[in-house]
Image 1: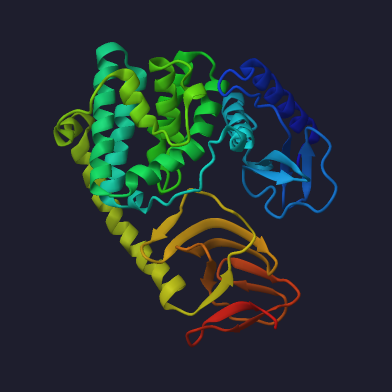
Image 2: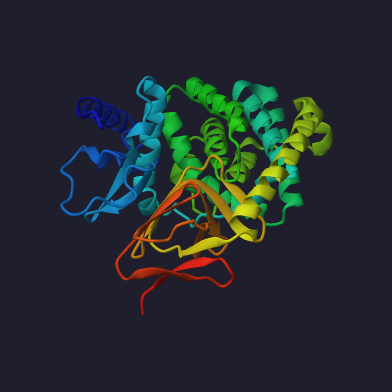
Length: 394
């Protein structure tokens, strides 16, 4: 259950952080409505009176900002708030408070897909960029400039290999990277400490099982902190069409290293590439299993209408089909779905899970998922033999 006393302490911490920041970064206060929620116990704590009406379906399952009762709130999953690390907690609190004001700043874009970051080359060149950015954050003078050159070269190499990568990555660095940068520099107001934390985030990032949607967090924090050093006040000049790496290149007055392959040798590239090849072999085995369960075998297809929440770590793209989302929850007029793994189609119109063995009643369970069917909806045979689909009763 949400501990009201501890929640009140966190609200005070957030208020103190907001007041100390004072609108310096973005020209607006980050302070605003906050709610901690736990969906299992249906308990919550708010820093201002909660709106009347029903509990928002996705509240408590993830950290995000949303409208509730006509007001935009920062919402937090209570179980995900770090209880024993005030700095990590501060970074999370301020990350979501930035998301609350992001639309009014004109810096909220439609999410893009970055499936190329689940390939050997995509992962390889991204991790080299991270290693160079970490070196830049930990270095100074000519060493920092050289590391920035290398990072830009690795980024350019990746974008050359994947035609749409430059724009799709840029969008996510605006959407999530700016929030992570904000959380970082507000939690660590001393520039050297912010640089150290951003470098630490880069060094921890490879432990994520996939980079498809997690990459903008460490990348955004790194580029933002480096821009603080190279172009003070850059946040007040930022536009939604900007690219953080291009801004850093212009502000630092450096060009990418001329030979990305040669520069890679300075970052233990051979061992990294070998590790990625091994990982890819294991990933193909998992991909075969996912295809068997979510594509080739009998499946249940639902409309993707309503509100979704999920975790980003473990997202797995299936090329040409869609993306497997872990710890997924969705609700709409048709009911609600909770699953350990759910396939969302590439056009985001449908959700797919392995077909259940029993279909009686309004609460259906399958392999790692539970569906609650709303009144007026029913299961019918799908387009293939053995498939099912959730449809509205005529």
